[in-house]
Image 1 (cartoon, rainbow, N blue to C red):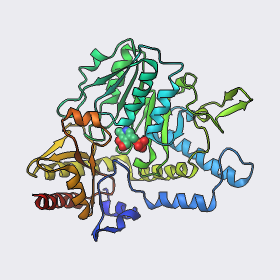
Image 2 (cartoon, helix red, strand yellow):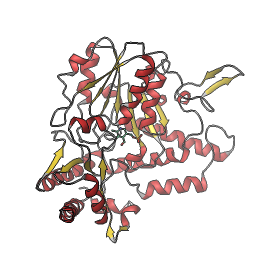
Image 3 (cartoon, rainbow, N blue to C red):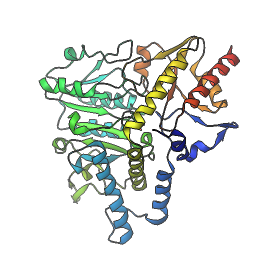
Image 4 (cartoon, rainbow, N blue to C red):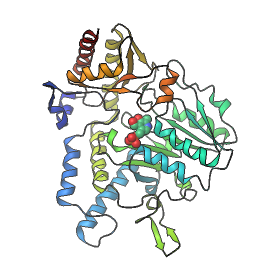
Length: 406
Ligand SMILES: Cc1ncc(COP(=O)(O)O)c(C=O)c1O
């Protein structure tokens, strides 16, 4: 039994009012609110435990290092990585994808090689590949999306070839909500071709248990801030076999073995890819967020979110002129829609006056919105703290907004 009212109380942010109305937060897909245990862990670290990591010989630095490295272990178990050093801390999903793209540039990609992505990618999983494609004359290909919002996987077998060096795709679309069958896709391409697969887990890691070993992906990336953890921290899972192929993404302190005037040798992974002082307290906060999620349990989170998704789909579908973009059978609790005759931004601004926070615009997925021929949409994305009443308030807010705009 998922006690949502109890869960809601864990989130101080949700206790406030906005424009005199209780906050209805429906933008967790952009960034989730933080439970008190995460906020307290951050405050406690800064108050009692703060020092730089991996450097000091004094107790406080040792304690900070211990907590920081304990998070790496926690993440390893959370995503079922085989080796501890496969967990690399980054600033977020975006940095993790850039790290992979640029660190593979020197030793892995050759002119004429191909990278396959999909039409439903967030810009974070498009632009880094475009950048390296320009630098090394690589070809970027796209798996198309069907009208329902699924990947057109029949096309994949025609796109992939001996020249394909990377398949990078999202596990869950931040716009359509579609959960892609990544395991089947990985099995299909790896059965025939020798290529790397990167999975963008920014949206999926919040909704389901991840097992990178079972998936057999080469890279898996996600951000702490969507997982009820602090901003400024992300995770790159990079399978061990890639560590020597990848050159350092950034140079600086903490990532070297030795430095002379003209040369440097590098530390082993993961430190080779973690130059400079990391977001120590953010990483420690991520640990608490994972503990929090695990305590709730993915089975109950998923059943709660399914109830929210079904109810929201049913209620929103009753609004005249409303069209849901993304009707896959396999969906996370994300609903994106347009209402004929109304601009998404106007609806979003008026919903705000009702205390309802939604995201409007292109959601950093311009090629996808172009595919669906819509310039701007409204997106409601749900988290563990959302209730059926939140959905009623969304619908009520939309009806009020439409009346005002008519
Ligand atoms: C699917 C997906 N990929 C990547 C990102 C980028 O994440 P971040 O901004 O945390 O780096 C997002 C953020 O919305 C996302 O939804």
